[in-house]
Length: 231
Image: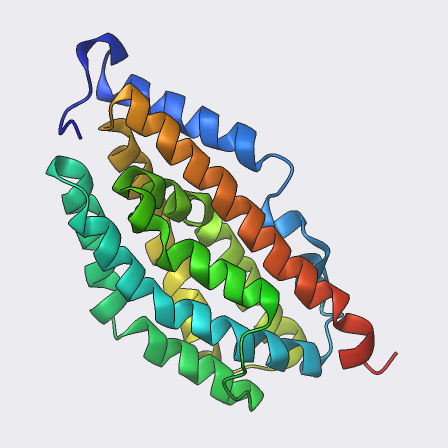
């Protein structure tokens, strides 16, 4: 894997712009905040039971992330490796382990860890096995979420405060990500800009796979709504 972009890519900034545009095309039909489940979260029309079930499922996804990041890092080199390592360092300690912050959110809802449903298991596997294909593919898997995560986290935190009365401890996970994910999104696109042409194509395949897995995860949450809401 090339540590520096080939000369025909032009400047790093040109390549970052090209990477961003390519990701935007892939995500255009599957932006997370456009999904009905998140739209109902923003509007405050999710039931508490739905939020609790979401937290119980999402915890397994969050718990997978450090191991997935470490595996991707092990298959990278140069600037891309450094940038993803910075993401992992934040995940483990800034301002506290993010899984601990997520547990505060789950506790605010009275949520227990749930056995992963098929959609959750597929999302976990997408992250957990990404590096087995390649570090570049893993970068793409990360990018699909990271580039939109700050906006998603901001919306979630605002909705929890406004519509569900969740206190600062309960929203801390999302508040932290609303801030950190701006940088993380920039980092992962910068990391992509250092890939060779072939590796960039591989990374974009990872973006596609991750976008599909996240959408399926939310589709499953939405499909469960009638039962969970008692309709």
